[in-house]
Length: 501
Image (cartoon, rainbow, N blue to C red; front, side):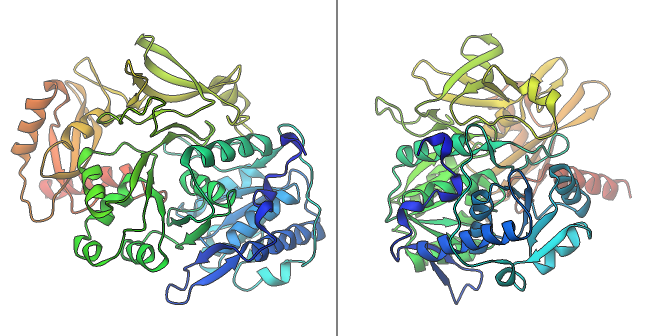
């Protein structure tokens, strides 16, 4: 069977004849549910048969609105086997945003859980994964639909931080290329146990799922991110890899006593993406996970999805603050920059998405002749390493100078007593916009505003130093476990109101 005829729902077909574990579901943390590949495969077929029985088939969108659980995998891959297109939905969104995603996708059926029922429109058929799932499934063998070239397999949505969420059209053939490439690149093997607590609707978790199941590894599933449970799960289930975003790792490192008492020696890989991370974070991870190789990955849902990784072909160590080196099969160019090695990054590889659902104009703008325009400003050094400068839509002007928040954040995080920093622009009549900083100090440390400003002025351009500094015990998180920048703006508004009153 050619790649074009390969149904991505059969990703793990080579492992279904034995009793190898596909997943350990920790929804009931003290009573783990072990699922073999044979069982998962049978359930995927049962979902596909159930969908066919209900009249769903090629191209029909199927919503997935649930916390992480093993049945999520069965619906994800079972829907693809039936020729349907699963639509993972962010369960942290408000009801109007969830409705927008389901309406935009055209989903008429959603698999979910009772506590999340209120988020879905009442006129969309609802299958409760706790009470209705077994009845919906139709046990028995199912012959998967052969998709052919460029048939859409999955439609995840962007986070919507710069507008409404956009449905990304991923295909069967392009996903299998990406999964095979990343398994080889990440050196994943059947003996791996991969802890996933990042939400399944997010790119990071979806990549981890695909690259775990292809080689026959085992997923250790937490329903949602919990610091203590994450550390305990590593120790109890001898996880070899964990994945997430830097904010999750910052929170784990705050639990020093728990980390010191847990056996984390089994972890050989920590994979992070979706945001830059500081050298202090890397140092902390090396301290508590001494046997781990830390993989910093850059990618987007649309772009393949991982385009940059840890390894250099000549064995060079990753330089400070680099976000990676191109993985095999990925081409890159820079546009609209000061020279040929800096500017907006555009990329091309066999895994790039087809475009956006129901958005032909945006698709034509962002996907041009096979090249995807990322919207990320990067530079490349003489050895080929890439460095993230900022988003084209994040850049703001202060007194005529361009400021990228990520550069100021990286500067502040070099301070010995700062764990994490975020920077946002706020309007100013004279300068246009000013940078405000939000800082998480190290535990037990007392920082003052003057010290932070002084450090920024001494180590960076004066125009970029934060005009206001707010100290937080921890960063507020969005549904994808990234920093919730809207919550930071609300914090400033509350602080200003308190000052005025």
